[in-house]
Image 1 (cartoon, helix red, strand yellow):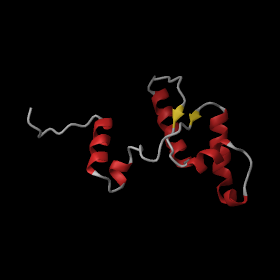
Image 2 (cartoon, one colour):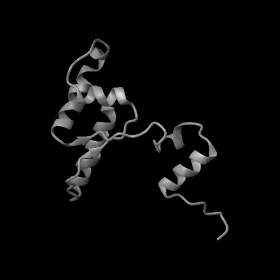
Image 3 (cartoon, rainbow, N blue to C red):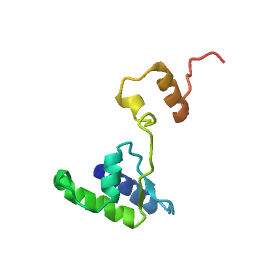
Image 4 (cartoon, helix red, strand yellow):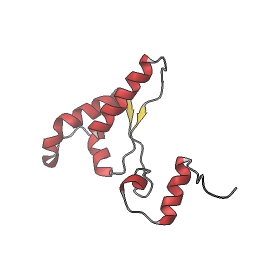
Length: 107
């Protein structure tokens, strides 16, 4: 998650350099409830000691309202079309969400 935040910040800085000033926070979609809960809660647990620096970095960006972690259902991540074997129904749904069209389909 910390890598995704860093990449989002990097893109935001590039857009600012190009003159696009966004007032919206970076939205990082995550379907892992435990990861979102840990990012929002500053209390450290025994199982999260190895990610302590990442937690504080993400928590800092959440507190500064630079980052937002909206909820997403486990069935809805668009990245699944590129990373997992999915059913043809889910594949078609994700293609529609991405706005992709079959260029070989008859008109």
